Image (cartoon, rainbow, N blue to C red; front, side, top):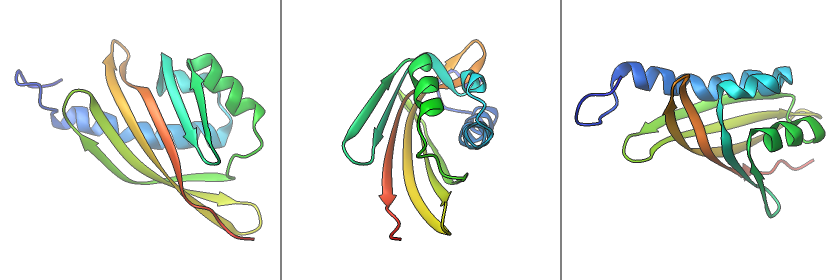
Length: 134
């Protein structure tokens, strides 16, 4: 719940901190149906690695996740920070364990909204921060 002034309370912040961890676990488990616990049905996911790929809607996000072979072997979600306001923003970093003992890092900036089922990502932008060298 939020206060009458619209500030986020501790319960909101705890729920928001769970989103990046849940996302990492779902992606690593290849649990595409489970992404409904992270994204709204109409979510937009921008992936900026080499150019920008824009995925519109949960079905498009699931289809892309299922079809790409560019997933890290593991997602370690770190530096999670909640910025209140309108919209509420969730910032996090990822360390991706890659084949060949490489590690990459990236940044997520999410606009999150409260839904009847809890907080969900409405808009996500991923930016690669460090591209590993072979």
